[in-house]
Image (cartoon, rainbow, N blue to C red):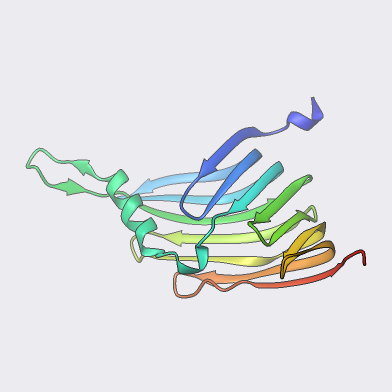
Length: 173
């Protein structure tokens, strides 16, 4: 049926959990020990939950984990690693919620673009885009607010993760 478009996904890593449906249009290329992933992807009927403690997260551990899982044993006992080079344009589709516990739960405006790059060889990554919110809840100073509109501006990298969150919210008095 129409609401079941895309592949079901449930991805959990130290940074976030993504559950929903996805469609991909990607090109994979393996050359000189590097797997390149280029293209686009879309997410719909989903929830993206950002993990607690993200502000204090050691992003270098992500690259260490990727390298240890991609290493292959050689006959001489050494290992070789497969580097990953990602360049993806991601589009948020319909019915996608973002959750930053316990502060924010919001519905993302469809067709919101996000750009992701990652290069495990240089241990670099970037995430950029403006995630526009159109409804939800904000919990601030032990009070609940109705989120009328908002935006999460991403210009993040391995050097700094400090997204700007702007919301307009109201509460019943």
